[in-house]
Length: 83
Image 1 (tube, rainbow, N blue to C red):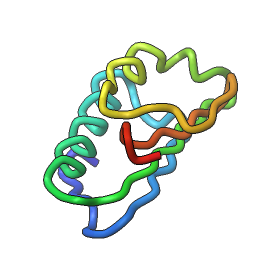
Image 2: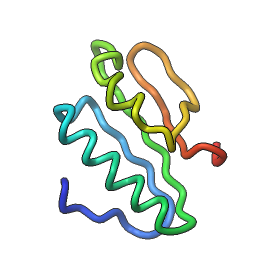
Image 3: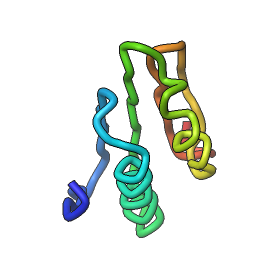
Image 4: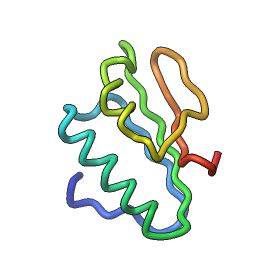
């Protein structure tokens, strides 16, 4: 996953509690760089069947994203100003 380069054009990223904190942080950084590299649309759906609070630290660090929808098990994120 860390060698993956997202395709050009709009993307939707779906994750179901896939990684540890270090890897999750690295994946979000890849997406941030990809997004900042051009006028690309991205939406991220993060799901955790227990509670998304388990990833709160990493999710909270994503100052380039804002929640579009959320509850205790999922959050939909979009770049700020692009919702």
